[in-house]
Amino acid sequence: MRKIDVIIKRADSKPYHTAISDSLKNLQTIVGGYIETVGLFSNMIIICNEEGLIRGLPYNCNICGVDFYGDIIFVGVKGDEFDDIPCTFQQFKELFPGLFDMEVHAYKVLSEFYDDDAVNWGGNP
Image 1: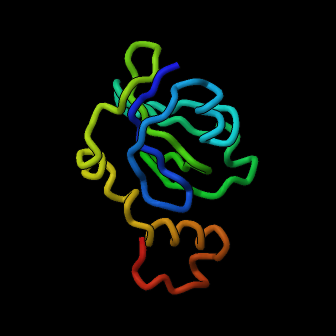
Image 2: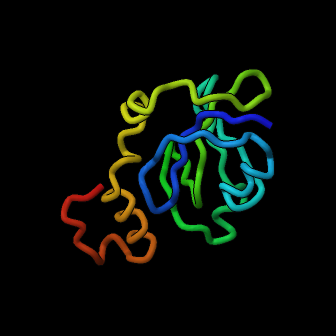
Image 3: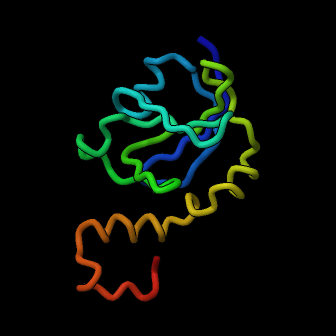
C-alpha cells in the first residue's frame, strides 16, 4: 500500500488535488462502493462507483459523454497499477475547465427534475 497523487471531484464541489492510499479498501471508501475504472487517456483514468446511478448517488459531472454519479477520482496508470496523476493541477484545470464551473453542475441537477421546455434556463447549457 502506497500513497499516490490524485485529483478528487466530489459530487457537490470543485476538484482538488491530494495524496491517498492506493489500497482497494481506501478507493472503495472514497467512491462509496465497488470501483469501476473509465479510461480517459493511456496514462489517466477515472475511478468511480460502479453502481452510482442505480444507488441514487448525486450527479457529479459529464466527461466525454459519460455521466458520473457520486465522488470520482482521477488517477494515473502505469501498466496494471494505479499511479500518480500524470499532470499538474493547473494542466488538469486546462484539460477539464467545465469541472470548475458549479453553475453547469446546478443546471444538470435541476434539469433532471424539470422538463427543459417548462423552464426558461436563460441561456444556460
